[in-house]
Length: 434
Image 1 (tube, rainbow, N blue to C red):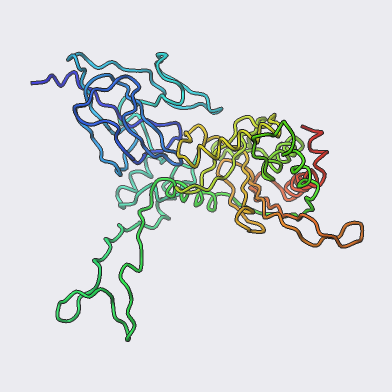
Image 2 (tube, rainbow, N blue to C red):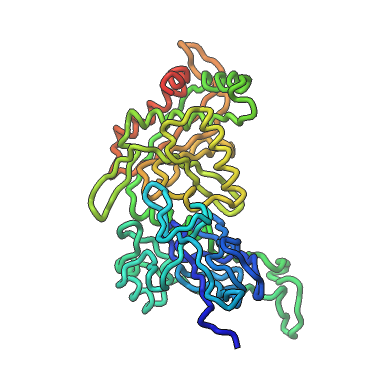
């Protein structure tokens, strides 16, 4: 009989986002397989990324403890491994999370894994806590409420007792009805008759709420509930910017790069933040501080098949226009391919989004929790415009800025937005400040 004392469990780690669970997407191994240190054993979907989990053990797979599609809590066991030689399986390096600047923080390290490949390994399930106070967790259990359907208003988004008390219990989704209906004689029909009209079956589709959609919903509810938001707009003549972009695309420096208006807007935002650093801040409810960031982790909203993702470019304040072209292309590709890591998706300080690509004139986005403002770029189109008292056809766009009114006053928001608009109206000034 095998010695179970040599069997070790790998528990779902905290992948650096501070979340309480993840959805198992697929297994890369099966029972009986021999695994090596750092070999990928499974993929899980966190809040906004699909993450490959490397094995912290070398040995033979004894048991898989979850099925694809299962939601697994952080600290819950995923897989059991026994050493192939009957010896205790060897442990690999352990990454317990990420620091405030996105750096990897480890408990024990061997040079086997990189920061993006390593994962956290809780000592025990009790070591990992979800983002909820103990009293809130107890009350939610008594009421039968899933904490993940509640937007937390406590420190760093933690669910409080008051949040639970005001929440509405979420009912279990109903199973879809069988195709067709039964007539009075008990025969099945392919459609439902109503007043002479025939309604086809499957008129509704029920989609489980999970993965990116679930996390996005929670973040947006938290944003709407906890952030007093206001918005301001400016419409501007960006003809000079469009002409400059056309010229830069023909130069050697931008050969092979995708130079878009959004890239230029991002550069204008970064320059404007140096003039108005208070727009690049966060609100610390627990300590009652406003934290002004002297670095910019610039988030860019990317539409993907899995939902809206917002990867961010770390330390973007010193990036050139050429740097932004390269990095934005990489961020969009990783987001759409599902290979963005938790580090890519956390720690943003300011976000820009582009609804203009969908032909929309302007949008009113919600501020991401942990940030002070978000800028929206509308469509850029030729419109009639007055230039030196004469009517002309010009490239025109509208910018919208949503902001947290606790930190950003209307004057600051207006001056910041006017500065971004001015830089786009006179892009040579923008480049001179790069």
